[in-house]
Amino acid sequence: MNQPAYKPASRSVHFVFAAIFVTATLWSPKIITAAETLPGFTGEKSAWHGFDRYDYVMDVATLAITPFKAPQGEGDGVNSPAKGQRRCIVVAPKQMAAGNPWSWQGCYWNHMPQAEIELLKCGFCVAYISADATLKPGREWDAWYEFLTGKNGLSTKPAFIGMSRGGEYSYIWATTHPDKVSCVYADNTGGNQENLARLGELASHDVPLLHVNGSLDPILGKYSTAIENIYRQFGGRISVMTKEGLAHHPHSLRDPTPIADFITQSVQETPSAPPAFVAGKFTKSSYYSEESFYRNFPQEGTYITCRGPMFTPCYDRYQFNFTNFSGGGLNIIVPKTAAPGNPWVFRADFVGPDALVDQALLARGFYIVTGPVPYDIGPVPAQWDATYKYLTDHGFSRKPAMEGKGAAAGEAYAWAMENPDKVSCIYGENPIMHSNLSKKPLLDSLDILARAGVPLISVCGSLDPGLDDNTRVIEKRYKELGGQITVIIKEGEGHYPLAPKDPQPVVDFIVKNSLK
Image (cartoon, rainbow, N blue to C red; front, top):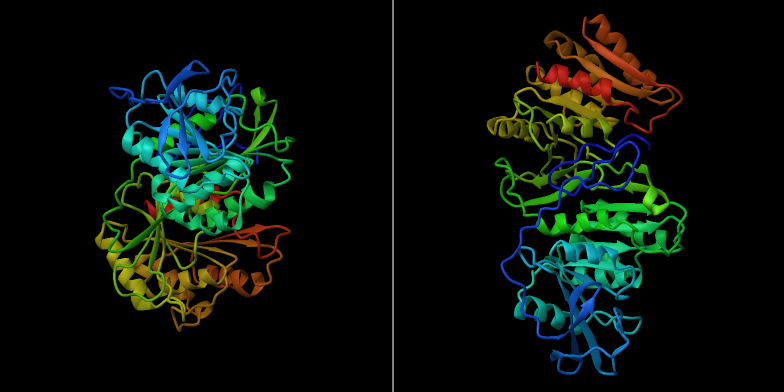
């Protein structure tokens, strides 16, 4: 898609993109407060790209870490360690940032280090321990972590940088220690099945990920795309930048600003308290669009496809049970700032990343609420009534907009027919007039809504098999009853896709009727 990225939101890392890039610009300045003193590293001191480098060696048998003098001629790189040892490196900034942040290179020390040099300028330390095809993460990595955090006072949540195999190694350690990671930047990442199986642990700890890829990388689909799809399904935050026409190499970006900003902003994040309406045990995840934005990056010499929370608003999604409902309880997506009166959408179906209307309503300050649906049956009237009372008691609007796609639209109609005075409007996408909420024949009960003056709107494909038996019948009967109904037909489309290409008419309709 070529339209501009959405305006950044505050919780996640976002960039504001101009219509044509001159460079990748920051969404906000890097605000790194300086710490009082640098850690007192005792390793043998040398220089690395203008910064102080400290070398150590680890004995694999004892895990003892001692200062080590780098061999002459090694320069900014590092040689393979002697048998039974691991080389360890930490580079210190000129002035340490508050919290003593640091990045951990998963493999290939000094390969395309521009992002790490930028982090050093921001007050980060940069660390590494020997890693190659035979030296995988293990207890040596745990010992290095304890040395840097325990003995030298660095942050307990490093940011990982992993290129190719380094990405695989970063994920090995991060998925094993999800509470000890601030973020992961993986570049044309490798992977393995165990990493994929453990991604839920990272997502549950809300660890943001950034992948930078070449569109021709032969392992793109096997690892990076697989990680992206799985992580997004778990409700985790993952942003992706895919460089058009490039293969596995070169790694990184010539201008590392987007990478450095992702890391600096990620390490500064603090967990937010759940809203007052969230009760008892809850699960928090993230909701954002999967839309891609194709942008020119002249400094990279190519276009880059960008998607994820760095480039589109990201919202908190809470799942909880305020009473003993069977099933999944309530599922509520929270706007950044609620509109006056706390308007909300009440629906029976899960909100996916392609829900353009809901995304636009979130931007307008609406809450999106999926009511409880027990596993063995559909929605239960008493549970939905209790949900309505619970949320209105917590300040939500007394007249939600009802919404649903397919058969879920039938559930929205059913609850509205039982509570016509508690509904602002009803929106259906290719509605199917079937319901578990009500035993009323829905098509024969439209008079209830018409008498209450509830406006209706539907978006349907002209080739939808249910168009004539559902929407066209609703339209004809509702007009005969004196009700207000709008039908938008998508010519040449069937039941899918459900969302309108242009959500604005629907959004305007819902906002107009919800905020009056």
